[in-house]
Image (cartoon, rainbow, N blue to C red; front, side, top):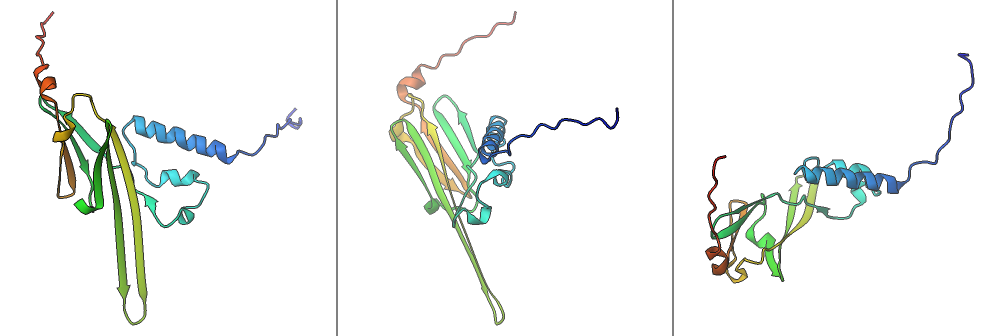
Length: 170
């Protein structure tokens, strides 16, 4: 009985579409748990093209943002280390606010026996759907020490609609 033949079922090789689907599932899972960009090298495992053939630039990780609200404003804060105010743009189209930026780094070393020249480029884009009660004309942006802070004031009508509701203990 120990030497009884075992039938082996042959299957087709796993396709690249399978790996792309698995990658999307992992990306979605990390996004749901707020871990986007936690493992930056991980997505490259399932790319069809090797990392060195993806072109001259790489996509920067989407910047993490904090969104807060008080009675008068919404605030969006994004950490963008290594960028300057000239490297980014903030725009509004309809009810969509979009942050865009590009980081360019160049490093060159020369001496008698060697010449090293390294360049890296990366771009990001992040969009937010604005609530209807935002006064779009009053939106301001400030960039200090690598942190972009957007202030989105609520319209006067929205501010007057705020009403406190008393919570009673049962």
